[in-house]
Length: 227
Image (cartoon, rainbow, N blue to C red; front, side, top):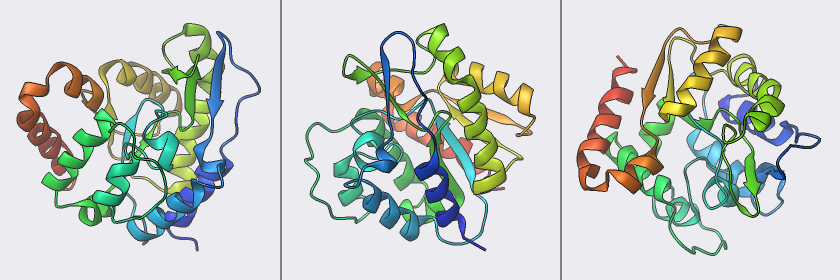
C-alpha cells in the first residue's frame, strides 16, 4: 500500500485545473511544473514517509511566491534550503511572510522532521490563483467561490479518503477561510472538530510586534491536537 507521501504526491499531481474562471482569474498548478515537482517529491519522501495519518492544517489557496515556486505549502525557496535542508536552483528573491511565520512555529514544535510527522500543511483549494499576476483568494469573488466549490469539495474529500489525514480534527488558517471550511464540512461531514487560527500573513502584516506570542499560541493549539 502506498505510504502517506506517495498518496499525497498523487493527489497534488493529479488535481485538475478548472476549465475557466470568472473575473479574469487564472489557475496555476505548481505540481505539474517539471522544475518544481522534483522538489516536492524530495520533500514528501523526506518528511511525509510512513503510514500515520496527519492533522491537516489548511490555508486558503497557495501563493505564487511560496508554494507556487516550491510546490510545498507555506515554504518559500529560502525556507526550503535553510529549514528543510533541500538544495535547489530557484532564485531566493523576497522572503514570503507566511513562510517566515510558519517556520518559526515549526521550530517551536521541534523542527520540520517532528512537525511533519504529525501535521500536513496544505490549503482548502490546492492550486495557485492569480489575477493580473497577483495572488488571489478563492473567496475574493462570490463568482469564483461558486465556480471552485465542487473542486474544493473534491480537495477535502480526497485529503480524507485518498491521502488519509485525520478526521477527528482539522486546523483552519484564517477567520474568513474558516467560514467556508465550515460550510464545506457541513455538506461533507468529514471532520469532527474545526480549530481556527489567524492566518500567518495577517499576523505578520498587522500583529508583528506580537510575533513571539502568536507563534507560541499556534504551537499551543497545534500541540493540543497531539494529546
